[in-house]
Image (tube, rainbow, N blue to C red; front, top):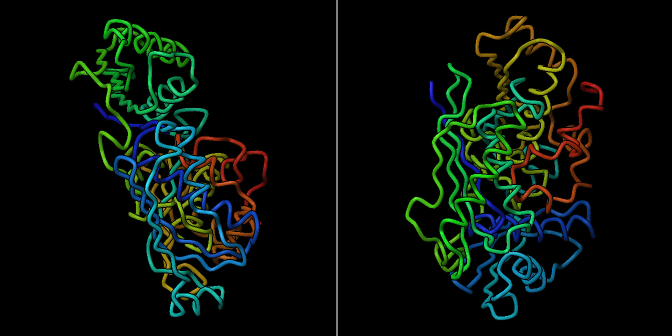
Length: 355
């Protein structure tokens, strides 16, 4: 059974937009913990558009925040970009529901965990993400910021079938050198997980990748939600995370569902677990909780639902307080996935279950 997962680098144009949106959010929250932010970014060439809603005692310097992100990821345009800003305050109709501690919107959010890796993430997704992490460490001057990786894994044979990396490179780079660098990264990661190294290797299949970032493609906040989560191994409710403050259940409930799914695994109740939480706008408690253990459960799903209800406050404020979501620097979540860094509160396994 072949399953593939993808990851993209921080220099990918969609990820540039996620980083800008989360930089604005984090700036607002650092000055005013009660800030309400829903900001999206679009980039093409050196044209950047930021739009959305901000209600805060702090007024972010959007131009400076955009410049800082570009200075790291696209330095050639960091001092020469056109910025258009369309930002208003949060709709009063939405605010009245949030003011009453209800959910800021309707929707369903999913969390997932599996014991197949120590990160409790699917193995092809972990391999693809570690490949991008290696590319981003700055050890290879021939390589440039825009990159994607993809791993196809055979779950029946428990082996890597195909490992793909497409990475931007300098004009002077020889394709043989790029392939050698990427092949070395692939083999190193496979060895670290005790996996085969006789997989099919694909590096820059078109043969050339010099033009990248916003000059090769447009970017928009929230277009890489599968790379942000579980590499396609679990459902996704469709809502993006980046640029949204934690009163938005798109973000807070997705983080909480991930935390709960990990806790279910840690409690020995299943080997794989997917949690769905669904909300109605202006209503505090979730309108539904769904559990799927993919036939790996040590207890019935109904028992696990009761276990969840007993241990967790699933109101928006309850999730925000339990995970400390107003004190998170969301700049750390805008690349390499939101469930990757083990010290983030929804990943921290040293914390006890529930309330």
